[in-house]
Length: 614
Image (cartoon, rainbow, N blue to C red):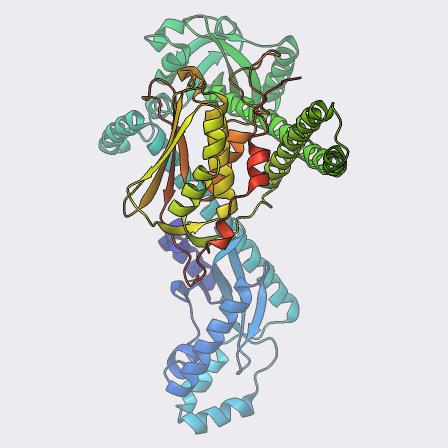
């Protein structure tokens, strides 16, 4: 909020004070805002007003001098002594409120040393000034010693601090009034009504003690007056009823102050000691935390500020009370936030350690698995080369080991990819490709495998060509994962269908089967990492619970969505929606050669489907 000096000070009153200062000391003064506007002006020297400012050439020099003085003053925190080119000196001090200058006060227009008469004679001749009137005005400008100039500077600085304190007090008062206005509309309405009454009766109430009671009664906080001799409550304002939860504040008149308030013993002793000090030495505010029991039995913590007031030559104790509930709730909320922040940071640290562990162990497992896989290939070659009556059994065991090796490779690949996705290093290799052809080729590549399992596999599309930006390898991985799940959970004689539909904005891929389906309560968690429908040790189908989570991540990296059609009955239908977006300036289209069936990828993705015949 911009602070405007004119709105924070009493300009007429300051003008009167500075006029008195000029009459007493002969020193002109002025108060300026930061834009150079003069708010007060007392006793400005005739030499400046009637000669130099009236001349167009010298007037420009005077204006620049004033602007330079203002700029120098507002850049510092103390007074500045500034002389114009003619030797006339001014002292300026900044008026600083909340660390920012909002104006300056100047006192001056005097000489620190005897004026240069030759300079002024030249000005009389150069600018055709009236010499008699000029010297008469020149002689009115006092010559001050350095010490007197320092006194004037100290005075200017203190006067500026006084104006700043008044401005700050007025600023805080305005802010408090604004807060009161925003937080208590009912009180604002009441204050407006009371202010109208106060305006009508102000002159009558000026010397009346009822004025003080009126003001106390309308304070926006609880006010209670007690007799310090016996702690009896003799007055309570209307706000008291609200904080205590009673219908009328008069209910507590005549009761002991300690019947309402509950203090710790150490605080009671301290309060009594402070009260004795106040009675001996005069006014001294006191803030003590205490507790009030409301009418409903609830105890709330409050702050009390105690002072001594005099009325009819008697001393009374006035206690102002502020409810601490909101402040304490804010403190407690801050503690909860800090506690939860620490927990979140700890969880993030644990998650980072887990991710690093998975990445390290995945890479460490990759090398021995590759060696095992190569050894199996060698064994397979030897088994064919040196066939024996037991070769069929050996081949079955080799194939079983190879299938489990594929399964381990699949698990390791998934763990590595999940780790890359978590740390943001997983990237897609996007090209503009005909995704209908990609999905058709993938589906047809496992057709024989599905038939060998006694399943029918169909592919259909309402369009022949949908070109969009995608990573063909990742699309293949998505579709193979969904098809392997369908084959895994569909009994022989079942049906699996892959259906593509398209409009101008998106491509919809449906993978539907007649298998065991997914229960409604599991459909919300099936795409979560390490989620499995059957977690028992005797489950019928293997899996790590990573596949569908990885599929979801890959789909979302293509800006798409994946979900389960919960309305489909008799099996499971998984829907993928991909936006039809092309790479700008990308002339590369996926070639036929790049879409050949990846037999090894199929073996890896289908490695969880076991058939043990040992």
